[in-house]
Length: 337
Image (cartoon, rainbow, N blue to C red; front, side):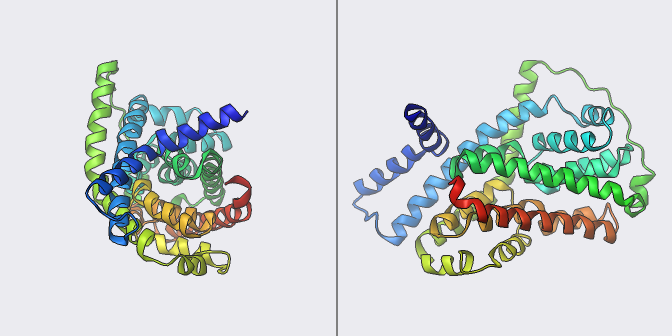
């Protein structure tokens, strides 16, 4: 058992966490005669390390996920979902959401297409909730920072929110709250040419390049904020604002994430530093989910597809789910880290 633990720790720290690169940067900075204990040097070291680590993981993850995604074009996904009914349809929809694009704004056009094609509204909302919140990339990224227990629980409970939220919306029978142009629309089945291995690899590479260009600015901003928090914000301040002393830390973190627009790659460096500084795990994860699931740009886009009442229900479900999840992780933090 001890050997397995050592192997896993090596995999998590050196392969996923790329800690060897952090040590390399430290040695390199020392060769230039720089003081590693200096705040400025510490910020530079953090910025270089986290930027490279996230972009490398991003490239690998998007390659794998895009290859998987090439088997599930919208038409095929719609046909798969059409075979299931009841809660099983919500479960399959939420699971299919994990292999779709990373940010909430990318998921909304697919949501509109599925709704136009006649899929049940609750099923499409399960997809819409899970897609930005619990994509496969989040599993690996969270594993590299928080360990496998946190990562697996995060994904499983995120799927529970997506399934429960979609099922709840289905029970409300609020189809009339979808804009008329979507309800009266009809999706046209387009023949999908069967892709070969080389075609899928080409598609995966194109997705890597495209996504990296879109995500890079948010990663740089996120890492920059993380570097400032890591080296310039006193630990006592973080503990007071987001630690045990603030029972409303989860709510504050969730609301703080809403005005931002980024995917999980941009939030990871901030979350990593906040946890290291003493913020509670549930607070950190609530912030990440608030950013990825309820960003203002995605809410504005969704408003063009649904009426205010349904939009409010969606926001309410996500907010309640995120807050409950946050307090749950706070309660079990010391059992799983």
